[in-house]
Length: 154
Length: 354
Image 1 (cartoon, rainbow over the protein chains, first blue to last red):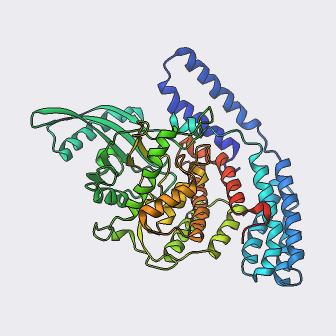
Image 2: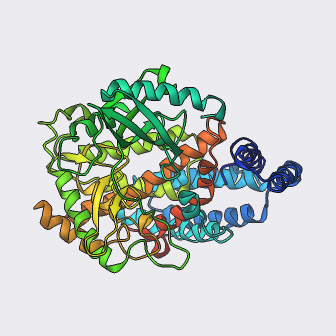
């Protein structure tokens, strides 16, 4: 996720206090709203990012990159060597830092492969594409159904 | 707009409206901040206008430049100039008489346009899983949406003084310019590059199509920006809204945007109206223009990339504290769904599209 949980909670609190509360007339509802704000304020410092998702993504991406490097070893050894070195340089921990580093190698690999002859590129791109597809599914899996309709309708 | 200065803003707006409408008096009798528009501050108001002794209520909309948001940096003037140029046209765009940069009125630049009749169905699935339109409404509105898009692309933009939007010229320039524009926005968001997005950009760079004609391109022609009057088989399109992304370019960009999976409202239908192939066929007939599948596919992918860029811009604005609109924050949870659609569109599951 691109917005830190603490920052998101701060934003929710701010919206509740500044944009919602002024339009709430019922004393009971106002009390409940203040209780929600109080709960959120105390929740914000008790949240730790999950590391299992980052670890799973890193493992999948590294496996894909290793397959891509193997596919490039003969036809594009310089690219293969560069990607292998970048992978080795990725920090082993903490998990979010490792994931960020591996993602950067993945982006580099995709752009480097695009410069290669089509038959070489295709073999190297395949494992990366398969990882991206699987990762897209993993990223969506924990998300709740969108409330965009309700948000738009008000 | 904080509640403390609403009265002062309303009074200033009333004074300006009276002057600009040439009316003896204007009174704002209703003002509500709209929820549909994500990128600009949109306010609706009814004005009691006295003209030549007769009083009447006219419905207007003010669109104000936001401080931050999805399409920053903002400049309302180009879209105002387009809407103003089309104001006397039968094309269903809202008559838009004036624009001001004067901060003394609403603190930021804004323009005022006529509030057209109708409602704006939104591109979200309904609770019962049904689409946004009944069958008879779809049969009326679907072809009209396609024909209206063809009419938009037939606008003589040179004659209407819209050359300031920048003619990319024939060849690959139109597609290349749009790709560069959205890549720049992605970079400007400052967020780490999503690998799936990087893969899409690589694919787009390798598939930039040529186009030999330049038309006006709405840029956001889709369910959610269609104003419609529902009347069964006599339903009609009464307005096309949200011209923030208007430019000159390849007309198929609009067709792909309109047909995107992003606005199908839980149906298989482009903008909840027609099957994508049907939309393309009706459009092609109305426009007298063949729909090249390769060009359309480029814009199918670009549509997703544009939306990702827009969401990332909103996320960045929220992260920076330049907006506190929680609708920007929820894009953090929407983005993975877009990346999944991108993965399907580019067949990542089958090893990636050539």
